[in-house]
Image: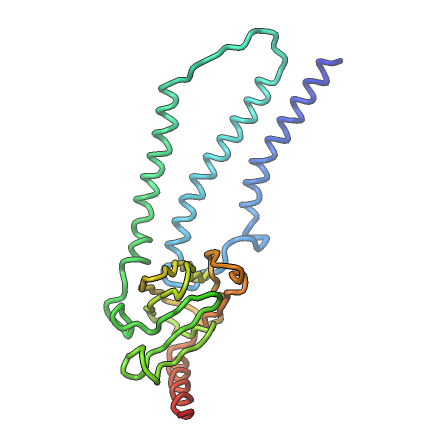
Length: 262
């Protein structure tokens, strides 16, 4: 009777452990259907970022499932009562080399896989068009605990009385490669727009060029993704993407309103 109880306990424990990989994989399979997956892509390089994520996700999935299945088997196989003496070992150098080499090779694979996405986002800035690194659309300042965007005057200067400064709301044209300078006025922040797949730290003392191309007009969330103090939770803004002609009209109206107050 005691042996049967022990066997049933082993089976129950094994099934509970087996539920971990099964439910884990099932959650990812159904996540999109349940509305728990990524937000839509609204930028030209968003698909490349997602593809890199899927590469890493598959690597982690295979490792997770394999490790969990081995754990399930070991728990079931070695939890039975065995009156024999334990066998002690000081390790296996070959096995240690294998489990060190495999992660190293996977890391090298990830490093090469991400090169194209990294180049697209961090290196291949627009060299032609209305906005470039030398001639950005705007400057974005992060500070505790707000976002402020400055649009230059008609001559492209970011200093002077005719500069437009707007808190929290950033307005940009759609289907246009937008370049801006990101700065921090105090501590480390992070400019994160999930639908653009854009995330860039704002580092104190640095002026960091950032670019994106929004592919759909709309209003999108901007959040700070770096813990920056007690008010970090409320450091949110909005990106307003307008058709190009509507953006030009909006900017002209802002400048007209600025001049009207003089």
